[in-house]
Length: 80
Image: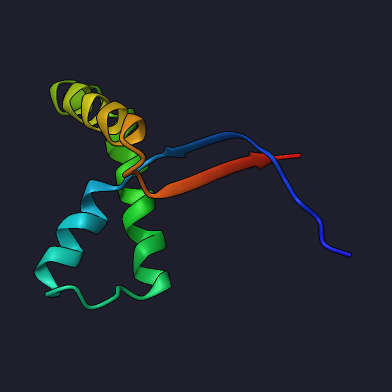
C-alpha cells in the first residue's frame, strides 16, 4: 500500500556564520560534529552579548533572507 502526503508547510531556519566561515577555511571539507557543537555554543554566547548588537542585527537580517529563500541550515517540512 502506497501512502501519499500533502506538504502543508516547508521552510528553512537558522544558520551559523562561524560554521560557514570554518567550512570556507577548510576548503569544503566537513567539520567534525564535536567542533560544530562548539561553534554553535560560541555563536549562541555571542548572540547574548550586548557588545554584539550591531553584528546581531546583520545576523538577523541575513537569517531572514536565507530563511525566505530556503537556503538556511535546517529544512522543515510539515505533511499530512
